[in-house]
Length: 303
Ligand SMILES: CC(C)(COP(=O)([O-])OP(=O)([O-])OC[C@H]1O[C@@H](n2cnc3c(N)ncnc32)[C@H](O)[C@@H]1OP(=O)([O-])[O-])[C@@H](O)C(=O)NCCC(=O)NCCSC(=O)C[C@@](C)(O)CC(=O)[O-]
Image (cartoon, rainbow, N blue to C red):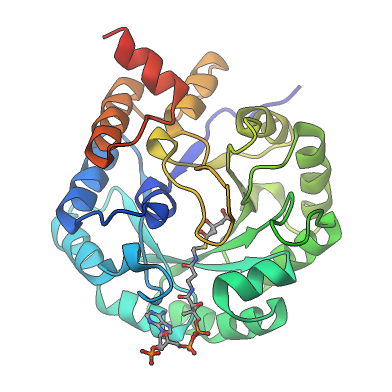
């Protein structure tokens, strides 16, 4: 068995998590959440989406969020990134001083249509000018592939299809490709097989795992793909989130749960679990929702 010595966590709670909250979350609360996440030692916090407010109203304050972060983050130790599905989104993000963005595609045609209103091929065409403009501005681009272990509309997705989209994203210049189990239907062997196929096209060092926990498999799936060399994990404080276009999807795997697993494996992340658990407890209370992290619940119950 070979596991990575250290793992980089990409905290997506403020974006993937909050985008799915039905009640409005105000900008001050979001900024407080992001500040607390960074203070717990997280060095990559995905903070907003420059998408249409008609499609995702919860992300409508992307400008205010990213401008505030650019103004206050003078130390530059934490990367605050944002999603930009097209050139319009990227231009707006650049105006706010964003230093890293992400484009997001899917391995499923139906999900692509429902999520970003275009086919997979059209989405890749839309990303091309985003990549060129970002490169000219010296901004790094991450790529996402949704539905890597199943689609809410199409069911099974062939690993070849995931590998093809991941490769396109890598070839167009994404520094990292994050593999999203959007509806959390994956299981460890399936996750391994998918990764084995994708890593023939994109080196595993350039891949990240973005697993939702709908069926309670996310930690097992992460363990399986770490065994194959995955060393970047996307997770969400208190397991916040879901996906507006994937009915029944629960949040991303909780960051607290991932940290606990990694600590038990002797793998370093540089994140303070106790502080993060307190933040998970705080945001869950603020949103009036149960804490989606088992580890967070246990730590809070034990004081
Ligand atoms: C992609 C679009 C914009 C295409 O939407 P469209 O309707 O095809 O785009 P359009 O170019 O025809 O524009 C329509 C309207 O949207 C506006 N518009 C156009 N672009 C932007 C923009 N960037 N920012 C703000 N506004 C924008 C544009 O100005 C226009 O406004 P109108 O004239 O009607 O008032 C739309 O489908 C959209 O916003 N989708 C949101 C998708 C989304 O945010 N999904 C959730 C994130 S992905 C995810 O969660 C999965 C992930 C990444 O976590 C991995 C996983 O778990 O699987």
